[in-house]
Image 1 (tube, rainbow, N blue to C red):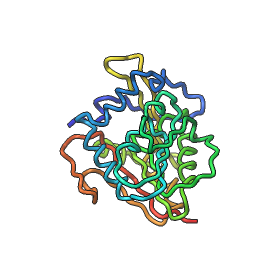
Image 2 (cartoon, rainbow, N blue to C red):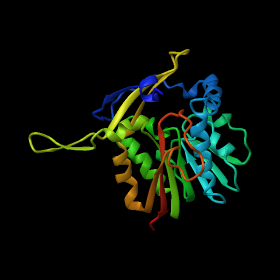
Image 3 (cartoon, rainbow, N blue to C red):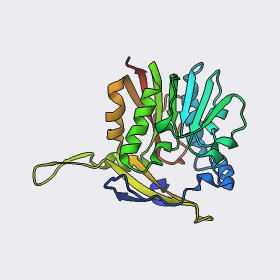
Image 4 (cartoon, rainbow, N blue to C red):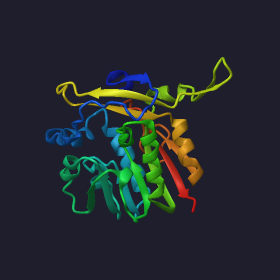
Length: 251
């Protein structure tokens, strides 16, 4: 199986700056919301979707916030007695959700002024990657940590197609004696049948993600569909996403 990395994406080593220019964002396109919602059930993605839903459901009965939630698919389809909150920057996306169990907020999570704290905070489909710089991606993670209750958990998806990302060295000693870090990749994505719908994503190296979250939690796990304890096994399809689960936030 070709990974999503080779099928859809063009990846480059990235030197991050705040001034990176993104391509046209499809998330304000009304037709794209329906395409996006339906994609969860397409053959390439459906196994990942089930894996993510079963993982969420292990945390039943909690105050749950899904950040950069898109159309709110996970919030609407996870089974359980959750109090459900979603936040996303796209008004088109948030207005697509018609589930009255879900409190949808249209706004930027980085500037979200809330006193609410949640037992479970999640981010799937790499919603954090739609930032203008690696600095802002890491601030996104800071916000996830901030809105998590003491003792609460975070689930965040990372992209690791065919293990390629983990094979990239995070740290390397340069010939001159300095330390080099491969901190992130940037890719562009364009819809095949609608080339005007295109955007750029920034994803930090998995080890950088761990560095950001681990100090705030008692333990963590990394799951994919082949090692999941939640009963969903790989069928040879999927995007190469893995889930990092950070448990029991330290007060």
